[in-house]
Amino acid sequence: MSDPSNHKKTLILTGASRGIGHATVKRFSSAGWRVITCSRHPFPEDCPWEAGPEDHIQVDLSDPVNTAAAVAEMRVRLKDQGSHLNALVNNAAISPKGEDGSRLGVFETDMEAWRWVFEVNFFAPVSLARGLVNELQAAKGSVVNV
Image 1 (spheres, rainbow, N blue to C red):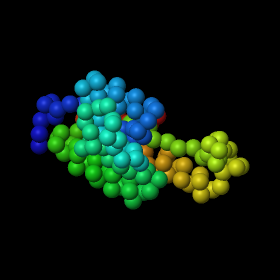
Image 2 (cartoon, rainbow, N blue to C red; image 1 turned 60 degrees about the horizontal axis):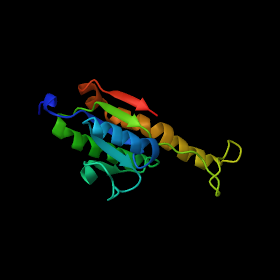
Image 3 (cartoon, rainbow, N blue to C red; image 1 turned 90 degrees about the vertical axis):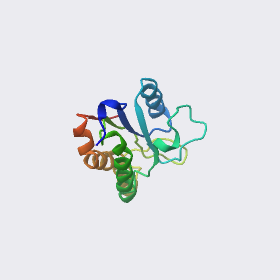
């Protein structure tokens, strides 16, 4: 096992492709952290941080099978740092929207859409935390739900 004291602190961030996620990557990267980004989009070639596609995982968090595969890939990528994870930031989230982009309420949203929302916003973060519990414990890491 490699010595974790020789490595950067590591953060896994979901919902990294824009907004709060994008700003979080910039902030932690500039502070010297290794940031493994996750989003449903491929890594953009014009991305401003240095880690690049080797520290990006494309994942559809609404699909439990795809989420489980992403967790397995995350664990592989963490092995070179002694399987230590300092922070898991669950930033990815969705809300039901109308065709015009307006937010939909409980009565306008069908149950299938609510299942999709709960898969991304609740079950995926639980699956990620449970799947990475050993790596988090090894680093005395934290889970942050945005």
